[in-house]
Length: 282
Image (tube, rainbow, N blue to C red; front, side):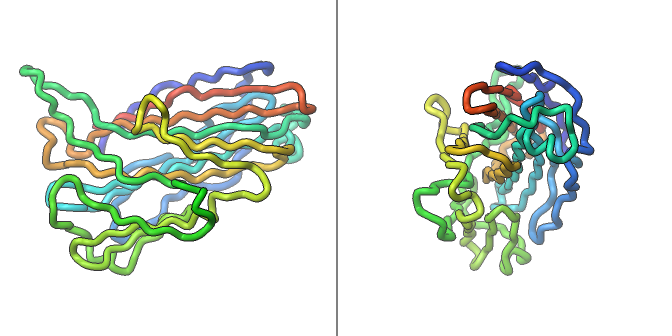
């Protein structure tokens, strides 16, 4: 199993003072990863992780990573990230009176990026396996709420080596499923309706202007967000496992970033930013 290290969380606030009173009892759901036919569970959070909190609200994230053999040279990885934004109004209503009941969701985001590690030997030659981003979801909500299908084409190797278990399909939840039909075909489908909340909030999807590997999902409420907003996001990428020399064939960086801005009485705001959370697999 790959080794994992990650940066300490940094929490910054705007108009509200940072406080560290959150415990896992606030989050009542349990995290147990699904056994998905055709895929191997790689890593994730055994329990939801608190990314940020102050008196205006809090956010948890839940991470699961799976992979499957893709070609003779590569593996295909699915990263599933669930972010839950909870305002003070909801926390207070649930009996957690250390929160301010007058704060509601206003806007926020989830960012996610995957890339290769920079390993070098004595001759300064890169030893890290190649990493190729294939798809991310939610993808294009302008297409409406229909289920869309996308063919995943290998970058490393030509003949696919997919498990026979995938012929009947695999469901990751959150609207994403995949299936192999013939030896050289692998299709991922996404049901966009799971990402659209009407009438609020408005969800937008972007690629960062200075980094095409950084995918950004942001939400904004037109009215009071008196609810917990749950956003499920995915990255799908291929690793050239045959190119690793002296390091694990499953070496990569995963970077997460969360932000929420809550509103009080339509005038006062509280901002909380997790900063980049780095997860290194090597």
